[in-house]
Amino acid sequence: MKEIKDKEKIAQDIVSPKNEFKGYTIEEIRFQRALLAMEADFSKTKLLKSWNNLQRLNPLSQPIGSALPVKAGSIALKLVNGLNYMDYVMLGWSVFNGARKVFSFFKKGKKK
Image (cartoon, rainbow, N blue to C red; front, top):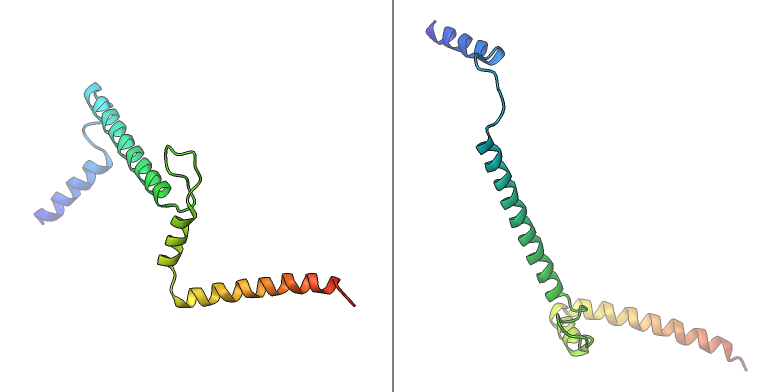
């Protein structure tokens, strides 16, 4: 019985609270602003770190501080390391078909 009365009192406090909310203090507002600024700074740092990693690992991007294009050797090395045998077979097949179509197009123009 006591538990029911306690729960009724809790429910009544929820429905009509004794203390009404009168707002935040200046210190609470300052704390919230500082917390949001810190979260924004962490998010910005995380985003910039991800962007730098993406630029650094992209085989087609230029190295930072260099005006020279990327060396073809680095792209070929990444291509060789990243593919398995089936990928090579499919790549060779598509290149062969493309070359065959191009050569057949030019042969059609040379009729005897």
